[in-house]
Image (cartoon, rainbow, N blue to C red; front, side, top):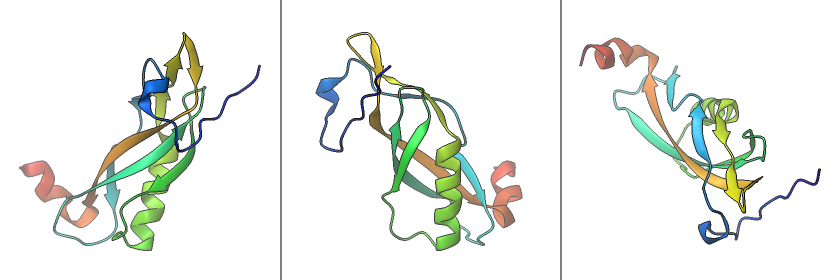
Length: 111
């Protein structure tokens, strides 16, 4: 079986269905003490098997510790792969993650 990799210039016109997140941590509990809930989008190259092959963090203001947690979480995500002509294909998709400080978690749950 030949696995086709999509390059970064391919757009959504080339697939019938984009990848769909089916399992994974869109919410990350961080150890960084930050009163605000942050959101970040990562680009994920989803393989034909629905696994994250590559991850690119587009947010630049994360600390190194939070960046590492975001990367780990993104690689744990599982997807329905993109479909083109009835066959799964590798495709870059976006995943938005919410980061909540462990120190602020009780406040978040109470609201």
